[in-house]
Image 1: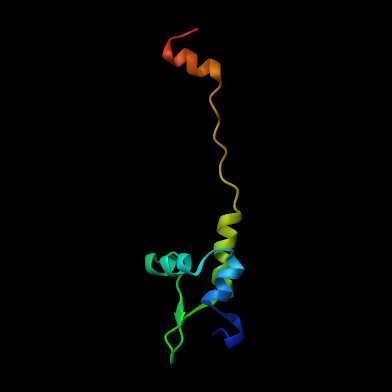
Image 2: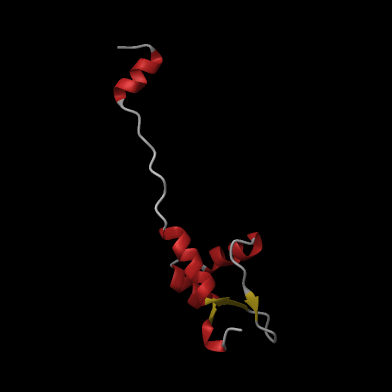
Amino acid sequence: MPKLNDYLSIGQAAGYLGCSKDTLRRWDRSGKLTARRHPVTGFRLYVKEDLDAILVGVARPKAKTRRRRKSDRKARRGGC
């Protein structure tokens, strides 16, 4: 079980990820990132490891797509 120091408030988590608090709230509602709740206040709390997993997902390079050359486009249209 994470210690209290392992949790970040919504503002701290937003700063850590470089996004807004509203983005974190949307991700929580959509299930992309699950927030824990403080047992007394009900405030959202985020575990640093969960935030790191989001950052790793963002840092993965996307597959490169081949751009069509002008000559390919012309040949497809039947032009010269």
